Image (cartoon, rainbow, N blue to C red; front, side, top):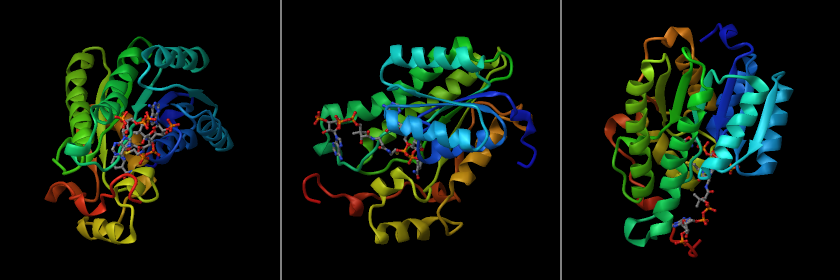
Length: 268
Ligand code: NAP
Ligand code: COA
């Protein structure tokens, strides 16, 4: 995607946008001249992310809020709307994950991941609805291969991301009538991210991941951001309800086996 001038002055709101893949997306829109709001829990990460976006020449706003708290999410969206107006692009990417066998996962451990990933995404999308530009807004959920492929020791993330994929399709049907498109990106293994530090914590595990990717490399932040830009552009004007793997083909052969990477808590 070479011409990004379409995004100049548009409002992009990124939930979970202060590190990793989601910050990479926020930075790509900032470079394209958008006004960017990032929201996450840590006030330090929020401040650093917003400063970094401003250093790229964007107008940026950072807000500290937990996606599990609907009142805090709504307040954040209102604050962003007050500053930059209707939301043109909404990215929902806040997530938490760890490797854990189901039999050792506490009810609260399961609930925590579902609350952040799935319920949090519903809060973000639902509460943003009155503030989305209609027609024209692009909504993108950040899913994962866990949403499609069953993976051992990932029951919490698999359940949560599968829910996100279905929510993407349902809201695409409901919101299409008002000109709002809803899609999801399912990233493969992305280099240098917290997700990979948790799910492939050793050099051996990382080497196995690379070997399993048909394109024989890890993904980059730009690999994901480029697809977010495309999905939000007029060139993708007829794309909605799609869950798009951006993974070098890694999901074609099914889910990864995380058993060898599992370290029981307290044993590390
Ligand atoms: P990351 O750097 O840990 O990003 C997670 C972001 O969400 C952070 O900004 C974090 O900031 C925020 N967050 C977490 N819990 C939150 C909460 N309760 N409320 C609000 N914000 C919250 O991880 P990442 O690896 O880049 O992953 C980003 C997204 O990509 C996730 O949706 C993940 O499932 C997906 N993904 C990643 C990979 C990969 O290879 N890394 C592969 C497939 C899918 P705070 O800590 O400040 O809250
Ligand atoms: N294995 C099993 N259970 C775990 C776990 C692990 N590695 N880490 C946390 N849990 C359980 C906790 O034991 C707790 O359950 P309990 O009350 O029955 O003991 C529950 O999960 C909540 O843990 P807590 O630390 O209180 O949650 P939190 O809200 O502070 O943090 C997490 C949420 C656990 C998801 C945390 O890892 C996080 O903030 N992650 C964000 C970053 C991230 O995961 N990035 C990658 C995205 S793919």
